[in-house]
Length: 191
Image (tube, rainbow, N blue to C red; front, top):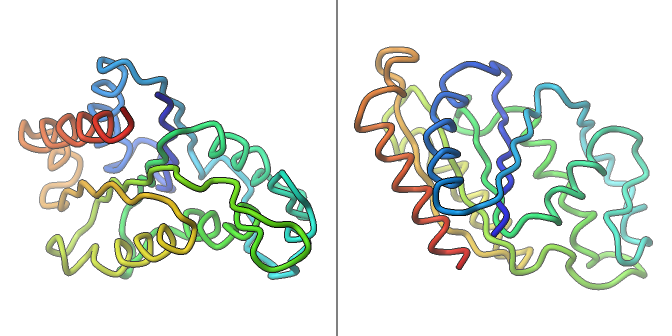
């Protein structure tokens, strides 16, 4: 089983990255092949809604020259995709949002190409946030659930931790064990 983690935080060693550590350790322990992409290091332009991708059959097919086609290749490689992001103003970071907005290249619903390139993949969320759980994460989780339904993906859940004491909030026994439990859930869903 292959798991891709798209780490959306602009802070490469911040809270979200810290929460990903025990998650990735447990995934590996459970036999998963794991890839980790730090979106902050990538150039990801916003979708231009040009629909050029809708005329390209069998591949992602975006006309923009940035890192998204390479990221798309990794997304197609994976059985499970984990969206790891801090929640800013009730939603994910801008680079994560750009990735989600550019889903058109996977869904050939709007032009001469047909089919869904990523149909059946499983998608989960790791979120860090300041406000209380549901109040902070519900809008983003709902958006991902709707994207999954539209794209024939399977949403497999979310693990989130609230920032109450900076990095220390994500190093507690409870936070670490929760990340490991979520990793086991992901593995179970992928088997």
